[in-house]
Each structure stands twice: as structure tokens, then as C-alpha cells.
Length: 322
Image (cartoon, rainbow, N blue to C red; front, side):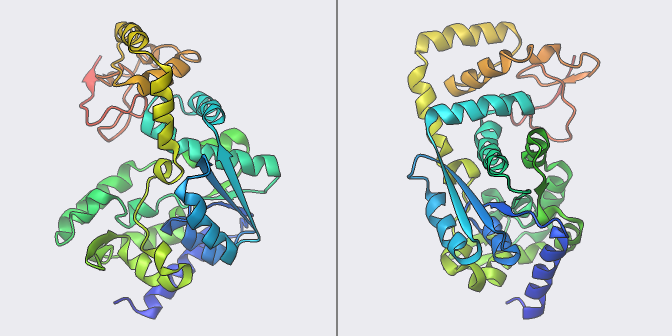
């Protein structure tokens, strides 16, 4: 479906976007995005994070690391070490949004491991899902290219990634080749109809990338179902750990205290992260009092273009005047 020339152009743009940085480690999940980068850049070291040894990313990442990297570091977290990472993450990101915390804890752990080992920088696959319609809901727009194109443009306006913020905080250079100018601009002009397509009776996002790189990374990786960072790394299991550690009565008491501070908490996990947040910061309502628009769920300043609050994770919301 896609010409050899088109596929080689994609490969060339990734190489150009990586530039002369030559970072020697990659955060490798074994998903399509990081696997493509590993196959092209071939960094010396791959780092994979998982909560417990049963994290599925360990299996897929091992296959790619054996092909393209000299060393594969598997970091197996337990509940205690993960909660410590989350606490440090909250201090940097100033958030108690569970989805952000679970996903970004994988990134934090990988960058931290790179720092401990003295690697000179980290490569991430950030941006691929946003540029190539990788999210599940986007696949439903197949056959409606104009609508998909509008949604992609909306995402491009609001997309943000924690990896560079965390890398800066930890003093580790981070490179995201999919977001480099050479690749970013090229990918934006690829027609939306090429980004979603059918294979094996199923609709897939990132279709052009899967087709172009399936021989490089193998069909099982190329057509691996999209998994969020938190899912592939098994971080979602922390929810059960937190629920078991917090009684219903404690949740009721602390949720009422948070409500008095203008914060609406959805569940025990949300509360746990909020208590971590409050050990370091005042209630969101006290932040940047000059900001007129506030999140109706946490009263924090709302300075973003979208309807998602990056402080508490509320979505969808309409910001309200103070």
C-alpha cells in the first residue's frame, strides 16, 4: 500500500530528528513507537519498567532489545518503590491526576535509572500517537478523514509530555525524535486516511508506520494492540494496593476535608495522590490568584487550551471565572 520511497522517507526523517544528540539509552516498552526508534537509532542501552515481573512490556521489549541494543535493563518495581517515585513525581509535576501520575511514573523511573547508570541521555517515543492517530477513539473516525484531520489538529494544539519536564528536573537530557522538527512537520502533512486502516479484520491507528516497519520490528510488535504506559508496565495494579490501604471511613473523612478546600475527589486513589500533593503544596485554590479562570473540580488556575485539568485530572470541564 505504501511505497518503499515513502517508508524510507519516514525513516530518514526520524534519523534527522534525532540529530547529533546520540543519547545512549532508550525507554523501551516494546510497543510500536519505541521499537521503531530502537530499530533505527540502535542505542546501546534499553530500559524497561514494570511493576512486578508479570508486566507484559518486559516480554515485548526483550525481543526488540535483543535485536537492536547491547544491553537491556529491566527495572522491576514493587508497591513501595513505585509510591516513592510517585511522591517525587508529584513534587515536580504539581499534580494529583491519577492518569498522569501512573503514566509518568514509568517515564520517571526510566529517566532515574538512566541517571543512576551514568548514561548520557534518554530517547522516548513521545508524540507518535498524537501525530499518527494512535489512540483507540481515533480509529472510530476511519472513513471520516476530514473529521479525523480536525481531531488531529486539535490534539496537536494541546499535546504535552512529561518526559522533558522530568528529564530537566533530574538533570538528564531527553530526546523525542517524533517531535523533532524534521519529523514533526513531515508527519503533519501525511493524509489522515493513511494513518488509520484495516489489517486482519481490525481497524488500526498508526497504520502507515505499522506497514512500513513491520519487517524491521516483526509483525507481533508492529501489530501489537495499543497499550497505555501504565497498562503495559502493570502500573495499574497500584490502584488495588491503595484501595486496600485506605478504609472507607478514612476516605469519607479525608474527602470531606478536601471538599472544604474546594477539591472534589473521585476515589481512594485520587485521595492518596492528593494527600501527597498537600504535603508539599497548598490547596489549588491558593495558587496564582491573579488567574481568573479556575477548574470547577479543584479550584486550581486553568491556563490550558483544552477541557482537561492537568492539576486534578478532571475531564471534560468548562473553566469558570473566579
